[in-house]
Image (tube, rainbow, N blue to C red; front, side):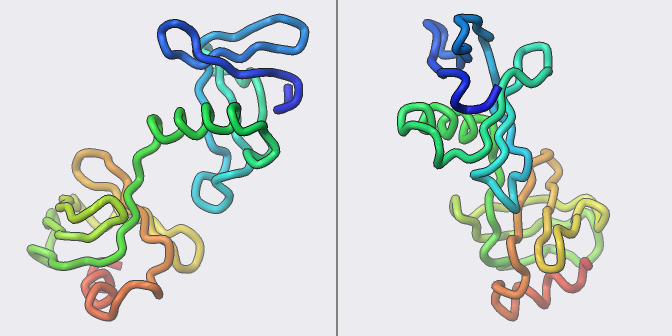
Length: 156
C-alpha cells in the first residue's frame, strides 16, 4: 500500500494505526526511513508489529498535513542522531577516549571505544557510535572548523 491507499490515526494507547482503504487495519505500525541521511523525507516504510511492511510512503511532502505530522512525530521519537558541529576536546588520541562536542542538540561528551566505531558515509560524512550506542552524525567533515578536523584526522 502506498500513502494514498491508507489513513493513519492514533489509538487510545497512542500507538499508530494504519487503516486501509478497504477497511482493514494494522495497529502499532512503526515508520522507518529507507535512506535516513541521504533522503530523510523520501521512502518511509510502515512496519507492522510482525516486522513486515504494512505500507509505504514515497514522499512525506505528498501526505496531507495531519498524516505527515503523525509520521514526523513517530520518527522523532524513534530516531535520535545528534549532528556534530564542533569537536571541542579529545581526552586522548588512544582509545577509549572522551570527546567533548557541540551538536545541534547542545554540548555533550561521548566516549569512543575505538576507531572502528567511526564509519564513513560517502565522501565527506561520518557516523560515530559512542559507548552507549548513540550515533552522532558528521554530515560533512569539510564544514567543521580547522581545529575539529585536526582532532578528527587523528582517528581516521
